[in-house]
Amino acid sequence: MRAIAFKTIGIGVTFSPNLEANINEAARLALFFESRLVLIHVGEASEEKLNKFLAFLNPFKDQGLDFEVSFKPGDPVEVILTTTDDKKVDLLIIGALKKEKFVKYYLGSIARKVTRKATCSVLLLINPSKERVSCSHIVVNGLKDPKTEETVETAFFVAHKLGANKITVVEEIGDEEVSVKVDDDKSLRKSTIVKERLRLREEMRVKTIIGSIPGELTKDIKIKSQPIFGKRGYSIGHYAQVARADLLVMNAPRKMTFWDRLFPHDIEYILTELPTDVLIIQ
Image (cartoon, rainbow, N blue to C red; front, side, top):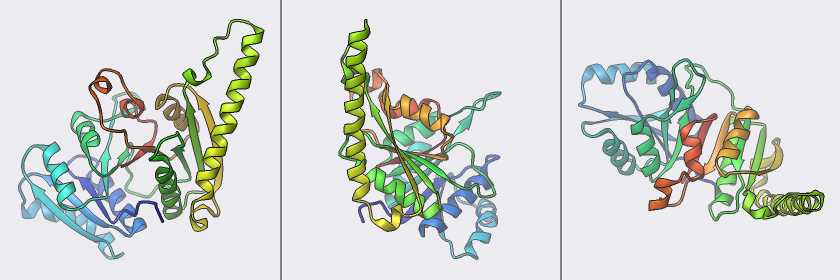
């Protein structure tokens, strides 16, 4: 199986109002994925802090949760990244912030830096819950990229573990691929034909990817292929929001260049305004 097995899950924990919800979400996921859980606290260790964390973890310990708590003072970004590497974390959970008076979520500066620099997969949670909220619909990118096959299979792996019953594979097709300027009926027809050919090409490519995934991961899941014309990153984020997906699964971006810092690339649109929970596969 090529899909990523999350052997160790990490989460940065602070004494915020979401502490219990964040720990509960991480513990539940660790049990679903049969993973070890590492709580990462940026700060000095103390018995009082440890007891606070253990109070939330103990109910899950009774269910067989394997965990540890790591304390380390220092720069938050560096501590989280080095601990993630030291503990061999496969999946790092990061909480988003909610804009005041708006039902919109974004990443704080520390979370964004960690997301960009992490060498493991990252799960961004927009609304952690103390009680489990079921995951039913997963949207995953199907763009033409060497990483996509593994990302799509991982989306099915996650769906299988969490009990999701629907996956939509979105193929984002840039407007530049159509390359037909529409200014009359003839050019409109030509543009329509080009788009249909691109749509069929993308659907066939995605069908081939899905066909290579083990049957135990695809059974009992409704699968939809959805080609979208538009700006990469922005289009799939908007689709996930409109479709009310519970989780959006994306390829991790390639190494950022100077130009990526000036002009947003696909994942930056997602990080600016999170449409739902987002899983970035490294």
